[in-house]
Image (cartoon, rainbow over all chains, first blue to last red; front, top):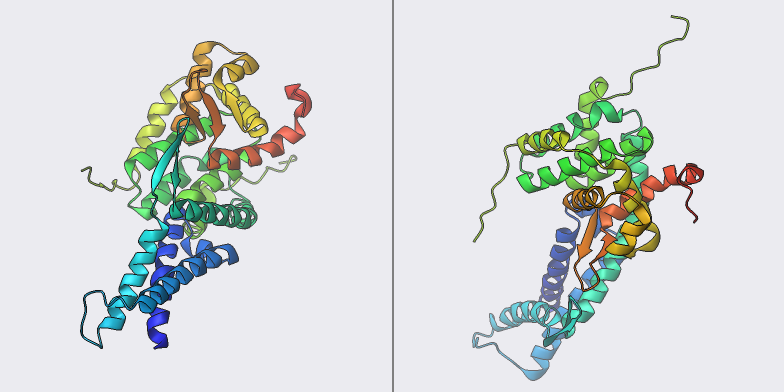
Length: 221
Length: 111
C-alpha cells in the first residue's frame, strides 16, 4: 500500500530534519526549507524506501505474524534500519589528531557537510541583509550590554555557559579597534546566531530610543 | 551525568561582562590575529607570534580571549599548535574586512 511507503519515507526524512535542526538552532525553518536541505531529506527518505524494498524482497516479517501489523512493523524497521545503517561506521582511522569514520556514515557526513556549506552560503546573504536592516539605527555603545541582556531575558533559557561566552565576545568586540558601524553589525550577527532574527528584531524594536543613535545636534543650536 | 540547568534570564551575561571589564584588553592584538587567520586559514602559533609582534603575555592573553569567545580554535601538535577561525570567527572576519579594505594603508600589510 502506498501509505506504508510514504510512512517509511517520512521516517527517514524526519531523521534528516532532526540533524539539520540541530545544526541550525537559531532559524530551523529557514535552514529546512531550501533546496540543499530538501535534497538531504530526500536522500534520507530514499534510504528508508530502499530499506523497506529490501525487507519486502527478502520477505522479512520482523517477528510479526499478524498480516495487518506486519507491513507496519516492516515500515518501522525500514525507517530505523536505514537511519542506523547510514549513521554506522565499521572502523575509525586516525589521521593525526583527527578521527575519520569509515563506513556509510562517512558518505552521510560528506553529504551533510555539503548541505551545511550550501545552507550557510544561502543564509549568509539573507542574514547580512537582515542584520543591516535591524541594526540600522542602533548605537553600539548604548546597545552592546543592554540589547543582549534584553534578548536573553526574552529567551529565558539560554544556558549560563553560552551567556558567559557571549559576554567574552562582546567585551572583546567593545575593546577592538574598528568602526562603530562594523561593531554594530557584529553585535547583531552574534546575537542573531544565538536568539534568531525574530527575537533580535523584537528586542531592537522594544528597546527603541534606549539603544538608538542620538540625532546629531544642529550646529547652530 | 551532567544535568542541563537553564540560567535565570541574563544574570550570567552581566556578571561575565563585569568580570571581563576588570581584565586588561589586548584589542589590537586580537584584531590582528583574526585578520591574519582570515587570509591564511590555518597558521602555526609560532608563525603567528612572529607576525603579530607583541609581548608573549599579550599574545597569549589574546589567544585565550579569542578562544573563550569562540572565535578561534587551537589544536596542539608537536610544532606548538595550529590556529584557525571558527565559523563565527569567519563571519566576524568578513564583517571586519569592510574596515580593513578601507584602512589597508594603516596596517601596512600586503594582500
